[in-house]
Length: 203
Image 1 (cartoon, rainbow, N blue to C red):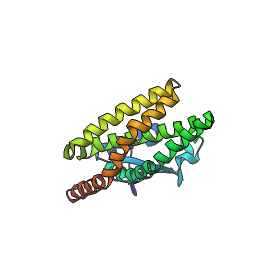
Image 2 (tube, rainbow, N blue to C red; image 1 turned 180 degrees about the vertical axis):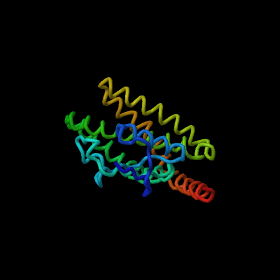
Image 3 (cartoon, rainbow, N blue to C red; image 1 turned 135 degrees about the vertical axis):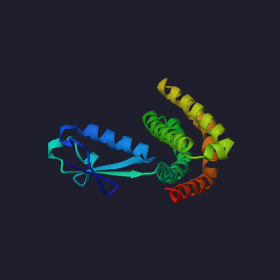
Image 4 (cartoon, rainbow, N blue to C red; image 1 turned 90 degrees about the horizontal axis):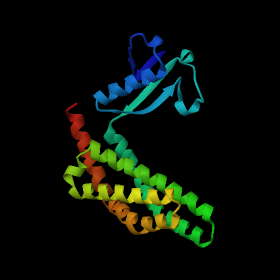
């Protein structure tokens, strides 16, 4: 089995005696030491989701693709902007479904929104961990804490079957947090690009 990381072949001792999960862990650790993150994995030219299962003995080439955390964050922020733009339409759709007694439809959209909000939280957490945004903008830290608290309240409502309560929190509290994020996205993205350029200069 040949291991390729970012177009370079890696040499690993006794790799034939190791499991695929061991290889994955070793590559991930190597990237972390280098300040990078695993972004994608290809097995014999196909993405991992192509395989229901695979036999390590039949693998020819495993290619690992990495990116810097800031690049991954920047790509995610573009998706975040799209999510926020659709968020308010989703709230209207949930409300309309409840008003029409289409409870199943309302709950389905509500769960999709919850998943999206959890993804947003993970991106914001990655920004806090991997950039200087929270040091540069103290209000980001305040927003992050309020967002986390609000998301938890929404999740508790959904877990308890209080869907109307969850929708109310989304409309009254979470909407304000997302508007704040949307208004500051361009500034955050510019600053993260500047940070990435500065790091690139010295690496």
